[in-house]
Length: 347
Ligand SMILES: [Mn+2]
Image 1 (cartoon, rainbow, N blue to C red):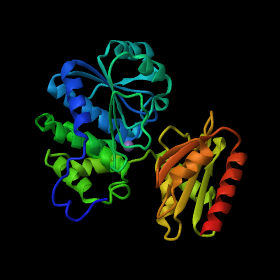
Image 2: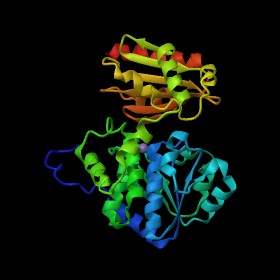
Image 3: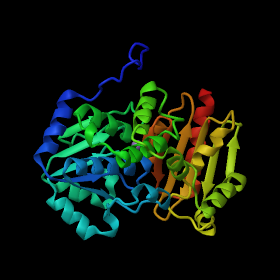
């Protein structure tokens, strides 16, 4: 996709018509609501807060509303920035949505991803803007800026700011949020980032004087003690490696209780087995109260978004995807074993 001729310049990639529609929509209004998907990750919250701060710098009354509580590991990004958590302030949040003039949806492709906030967003009679990098964006948006080839929504926000002529409104805080978003969605530029321009964007963000060592430490290398112990326990006692190539980690509700599990504590656990040279497919199953959460990572040709879509009501990206299973842990594992047989036959 990136030819050698193109890498010497930063290409403009946003569709001119959509970009103009976005600029017009923003220019017309003062009150703007920015939303991201439930169980926000670094890119979801980073891109949302960055856009919010930038719009405030432009003079807009912008509010970020996230569907549910942010994991403790991400609260450092929000320091000194106000935002609303829908699940904790439903009345206030729905009032803000009811009174807004524009809704922006960041880092998700349809309203099923926003949990109980969905009806409020669907029913709102105001223009809706999508800014996202997931496949298959829904048709319910008035402005659609969708770029699945990009590393992150945060990178896309940087490009929109650049192409919309809003660069004067960027500052250190906006840049820090975007930097964290790109860092977390690419595993610190490990995956979904094999093209020169993502480094160009990181370089430009550095120009705003961000504290990179601090952001790296907080976003990529800080976990609570119980999470470190849960990861160690999972790798030592709850990981099965099949044929030296496929890894399955399973944590049941007793495991989670024993290690005082909180949202975010198993973040990046699924990536760990891929550190072993020949393991190219890793699956993690977690027995949550309402369902079995399944996440997958892969290297090479194996598309785990397809597996998660076909077997676990999910999706995502080729090398990083997730889904849910409604049934017993044993049944979920049985499905996994079926997939293993299929993959073995192809190998
Ligand atoms: Mn993302």
